[in-house]
Length: 81
Image (cartoon, rainbow, N blue to C red; front, top):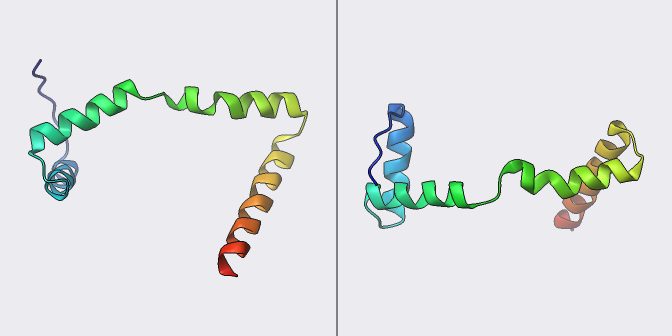
């Protein structure tokens, strides 16, 4: 199936560069990334387990965000060592 879309020139340029970097024709590369986008899970599907865990935790949003920041800080500190 052929589909015609309009995209900004900057996006088209980036798409061409990425296709070239992958050694593919623009049409082939574009088809591949569109298929991946449609076949992959949605953002809502990816976040559903996290949202469920948050709801079950009884934590406030601030507590949840603080926990995430603390974990991120620990990971960054470990990488420095």
